[in-house]
Amino acid sequence: MKEKRAISFFAGVSASLIIVGTIILRTYYRTVDQHNAMLISAGLAFAVQLGSYALLRPARPGHGFPGELLLRWGLGAVLRLFVLVLYAPLARIINLSVEAALVSLVTFFFLTMMAEPLLLEYVR
Image (tube, rainbow, N blue to C red):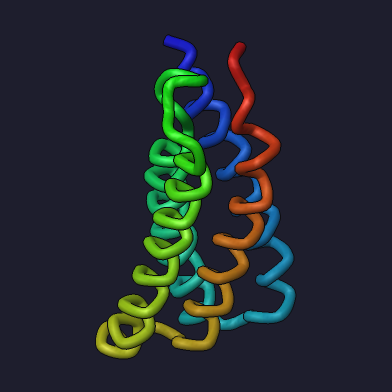
C-alpha cells in the first residue's frame, strides 16, 4: 500500500513539474505544431518517468545487495536515453516539430529526474 502511495505522489509531483515546464516552454515555442509536439513529449516523459521511478524504488528497504540502488538508477538513465534516441527519428516520421519535441522531452526528463531523490524515501 505504501508503494502505491509513493508512486501516486511521484506521479502528482511529476505531472505538476511537466505542466510548469510546458508553460515555460510555451513562451518560446508558439506554433500549434510545436505545442502538439510538446504535449506528446509530456505524455511520453510522464510514462517513462513513472516506469523509471517504480524501477528505482526499492520493494523492501535493506534487502538488496550493495550498489543495487545505483544499478537501478543507471537502468532508468539508460531507459531515458534509449527513449530519447528512438523518439528523435520517430518525431520526424510523424511530422512533429523535432526541435520542440526533443527539447521538451529532455526538459521534462530533467525536471522529473531531479525530483526522484527527494521522493525516494516517501513512505506516507
